[in-house]
Amino acid sequence: MCYRPHMRAALIAAFVAFVAWGCGHDWSAAGDTGTESGPGDAEDLVPDEPGADGDAAAGGDDSSPADDGTPDGDETRPEADAGDGGEEDGGPECTDGADCDDSDPCTLDRCGADGRCGHEPADDDTPCGPASICCGGACVDALDPAHCLACDKTCAPGPHGAALCLPSGCGLSCEPGWGHCNADLTDGCEATLTDDESHCGGCGTSCAEQESCVASSCVPSWRPVTDAGAPTGRRHHRASWTGTEMIVWGGTSGSALRDGGRYRPADGTWATMAAAPGAMDARYRHAQEWTGTELIVWGGTRGGGLDLPANGGGLYDPAGNTWTNMDGGTIERSSLTSVWTGTEMLVWGGLVTWPTAVRDDGVRYDPVADNWDPLPPMSWSSPRWSAVAVWTGTEMLVWGGWRDTTGRPSATGDRFDPTADAWRAMSVTGAPAARGAATAVWTGTELLVWGGATDDAVGSAPSGSLGDGGTYDPAADAWRAISTIGAPSARHHHSAAWTGTRMLVWGGQLANGDPALGDGGAYDPATDTWTPITLLGAPSARRGHTAIWTGTEMVVWGGSTVTSSATVYYRDGGRYTPRE
Image (cartoon, rainbow, N blue to C red; front, side, top):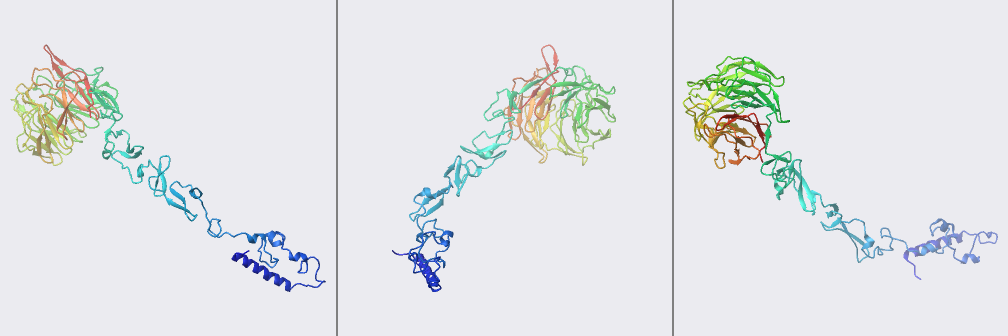
């Protein structure tokens, strides 16, 4: 038989040990105690049984001096090389791929021709579990927006929506109140589910033509304003919005009135107002401004046409339901224009007596000091009454109106800066045609003027109504026309309210003696387009009414119309929520 090299080494070591043992042994009869085996004994010629040596029992080295030189049974077993997987001298560690399974779903396990295991990363996008794929050798969630269904597919967020991965591909997780209702991911969650009539409360949920989407529910666009607890019917009154209430005061129902009421849209109820101070005349066509805490009522006419200016004025506190008299130290007037600047009321023009005195001056009132001061005069003549005025945040813009009592309308305007205490004229290039009894709103950047009449020969009943208007940009001192395509019919004594994006025009009258109008339109200055206001559920047709914007709806109240036999004064109204 042949021995492997390591077996030969073991035998040589055993032989050396045997020789050393023989050289030191006492071979005499006296030296043989019978407890040791020597060469002369028969047992010395028989190889030790496995385990007979103490080193074998203890697992010692076969080449130790105590070894008898005869190979033990363990010396015939092959030794395993370190790192060869237990196989002798690089023997096979596998016979097929199953022997190489490392339990990683994103590696390819194989048994090579040399019997060695190999492991390679699986291809990207290889399925590695339920809704999981391999990416870069790691098993990842296949619905993760960072690698949506494929390692190289990343989902992007959009306006009002976070990135989302669905079994069908990329999508968006929309913020509350928003929806992704089209096929374009780039515009994000584009639908406002709270007020979009095409997607009211959810994509594809449409409201009917006469409905608006309010708080994600379809409701009638027009809802009634009750007359229970309301003031008596009237027109040419004034209405102001406090943030929670609409305060109505004054007006006429054939004679001037000196009372009012408070309407709360939140619960749809009316609250009574305390009686005005005795020094305050009944009035209509007056100035009324909300300061943030008090209502200013001043000016107007007390009756007899327009020739009797009302005396006195008052400050009304709704928190305490109380009135305070105002200082009367200035010239009263009716059909004036006024604005609130945040600290004071500015007044311009108006009538003092009919038919001769049209004011060409103005005043400013500080309610904290209860003090009046005159506005500086203009270097040009600018008398006017029944004009329009708005506050821009820095200036009062006054435009149009009638220049005298013969019915001559104006097409000019003026700008007053209270900080500089100075006037300057507005451009007339491109301005609308001259008119009085128009309406105006301030958009935040522009003045919108619409409707009105060209003649006022009979005072409070103008004729020659208009159905057009213009937009004035004070930054550029420039006018542009408002489109007439789809606009409401010509009218005056109508109302206008600004929603934040559109001007709502409603009601009015075409000519003296005609029945009032009960329709209107919404004008979008961004697109220069009109949209009709639905007639379904709208209040009765009327003119000389008021309209305020609450932040979510337009509240119309009061006004009058004529029938074949009488004038009808209204004490009800309607609440209109625009369709988006």
